[in-house]
Length: 216
Image (cartoon, rainbow, N blue to C red; front, side, top):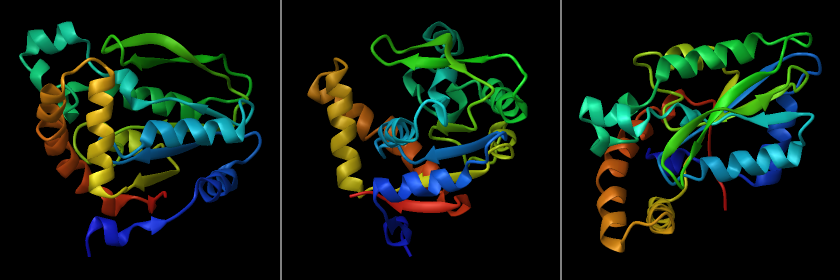
C-alpha cells in the first residue's frame, strides 16, 4: 500500500480529542506531528494548541533548531537548508528530554523558534511552563532513526504523521515559498528539488508513526 492509502481520514476535532486523551494532569506528555514539507504540520499544531488552550498545551517546533545561515555557509551546505543534517539534532533531543523531565516545581524552560521571514532561528523565544501538561512538537525528522533524532523520539509519547495528497502538498509549498519572497521559478526550484528530496526521506519513516492521518 502507498502512504496515501495507509492514511486515515480524520477531522481536526478528532485530532483534538486524541490529544486530550494523552493529557494526564500533573504529568508531562509530549505529542509529535511530522510529515513531508507542506504537509500542514505547523498549521495543525497551532490549531491543536489553540483548541486545547494555553493551560493545557504549548507548541515547541523542531524548526527552532535550524542551524544559522552563517553556520550553514561555513559548512558549505546552505543550498541544502532543510535537510536533516542542517539542524542541531542534538540540541533538539536535549530540549525534548528536558521538557519530558520537567516537573511542576521546576523553572520555566525557554525554547527557540524559527522566524521564516528572516530565515533564522531565534533562541529562548517560547516559554514552557512546568504546569502545562502537554507539549506539542512538530517537524520533519521526528521519526528519523539516525543521529540524535531517535533520542528525541524516545521522549515523545506519540507521533502522528500527516499525509495530505501530494498535489495539495506541492501547492502549499509553492505558495509558501512565494509568500516569503521567492519568484515562481525559485519557488518551483526549491519545492521540486530540495524539498522533494527531503520529502522522500521523511515519507520513508511513516511506518514508525503511531497514526498516519489525512485532514480534509
